[in-house]
Every structure is written in structure tokens, then in C-alpha cells.
Length: 126
Image (cartoon, rainbow, N blue to C red; front, side, top):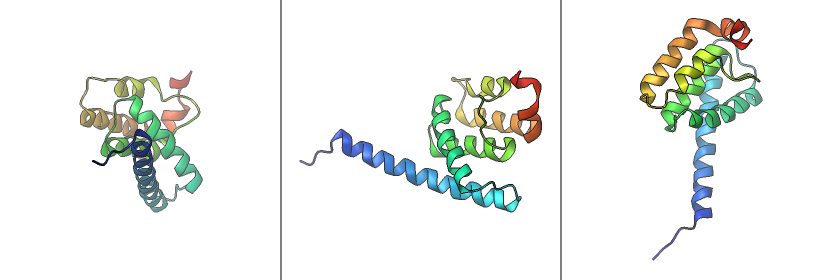
């Protein structure tokens, strides 16, 4: 009987995550280049890597949900910053009992309502 060791499974997971991150980077680059707000591939890779890590902390684990979270943050808010997301965003994302679809819809709505500049330059960070 064939047995797969834990380290082999971890290697398979790492390859899948890398593939997902690459596909997400390409998607974001296409979307941003269409709106002339594309800061470059290094920025995109950094944003995707951070977004994938943060998404799991908010209970977003499927590719669809992680991609939606990263896309909303990058396209509507201008990306992840040095500081944590504003409190209203965290209140939505930390609603752990909420269905991920509903959570993402509310997060996208919040992102769209505050816009890129208002989200990062407002008093929410003070």
C-alpha cells in the first residue's frame, strides 16, 4: 500500500498555494492595468502573500473567498498598508460565525462606500 508522508503532503500544499497566488497576482495585474493603477508585479506579489495570510485569520479559507478578500482590499482600498485594516473593516471580518459569502459581500460594500483615499487617510487610524 502506498503511503504519503506528512512532509510530502506539505509539499503538495505549498505547490497549490503558490499556484493560487500566481493566478491571483495575474488577475489583479490585469484588473489594475486596465485602470492605470498598477504599481508593479513586486507590489502585487507582496499584497497577495499578505492577503492570503490575513484571510485565514478571518475564517476565509476557500480560494474563492481568499481571492475576493484580496481583490476588494487591493482594488477598492489600494492594498494592505503597514497598519491593520480600519476598525469597521475588522468588525466585519472578525464576525467568525457569519457565512463567508455574506462576510465578503459586506466587506466589499464597506470598501466601496469609503473608497481608496477615505479608507486610508481618515481618522479611523488615529
